[in-house]
Length: 390
Ligand SMILES: *[C@@H]1O[C@H](CO)[C@@H](O)[C@H](O)[C@H]1NC(C)=O
Ligand SMILES: *[C@@H]1O[C@H](CO)[C@@H](O)[C@H](O)[C@H]1NC(C)=O
Ligand SMILES: *[C@@H]1O[C@H](CO)[C@@H](O)[C@H](O)[C@H]1NC(C)=O
Image: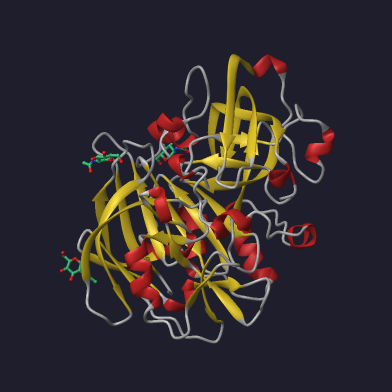
């Protein structure tokens, strides 16, 4: 959602995405879910047999699994249900930031209408601690800090720093389906002052079977975050690991090249971060140009703020070379959504990263992958594998 330096320089569509939810859209998709068991329920609700993988995860997780459900028809954001101090909150699990903040009883009621709120109990207040976050679209939130119990997919952190909002800007207020953000980047970029606080992952890590979490965001369907274990039923082929550069507190790594469709591989270093809170896949200009050169009638639209093409276009796959392995994003996944001005024109899921200097591998990339985030005693690393059924 907010990758540090990205603030103030996020590409236009990322800026616009916050405004794409209307209240009615949000209300109609305000799901209430809790772990694999409820994903199974969801599949039943839609008359589909639950995938065997989910049943296995529900029955056999050595640690915890929480579902991540798309908020709209375009997977603009995914929300998960988290128990924060006894209240169930709908939160975005965000590997691009490290704060766990929630709508709270400290805000004026005019700001919290339609949201679940964390009930701030003064006996749990962390004296003198404050926080403030500004996102790429200028939206912001700030407040005080409490130490409280947080439960995610059956895993509990008893003394988790909960950043309770005292004020949240209007762009965030209108997203009724999101009651807060749950940061999964490194604790070093916590915005809490004067002392940084640990993320939920850092707090529960010592008690996890393995010091990792694995993300399975899905195309137009609920996915999962697995904590403490790798679910072999969710990926196919080998897992390829690369070291993470934690200097900026992000899940940052270097890819070594790319290919468009069945074309040959171009070798070039792509410095990138994994960011579940970002909707699209943002890449260097040369890479983006090379991709859309293979998309008939693709063009840059000033009004839309990025590459567009006729919705009927068949898009080529996009392959990123990571640790020597080919990580393929199916062309279909790169059609993000019809534009608001013309429903026959679609906005691309791959866009230029611009001046940010580091590529952002958001949901468009992640939806076809099983991505392991490991932070044990050695250098943290990311593991990539192709999702089953992609
Ligand atoms: C995770 O699983 C391990 C081994 O099964 C167990 O000892 C540990 O308590 C679990 N941790 C959490 C946070 O549930
Ligand atoms: C997985 O790795 C093994 C050992 O390195 C290799 O022999 C095999 O071909 C790989 N499989 C795939 C699907 O890439
Ligand atoms: C890690 O990232 C920092 C800042 O982004 C950069 O200066 C440094 O060279 C990187 N280190 C490695 C080993 O790539």
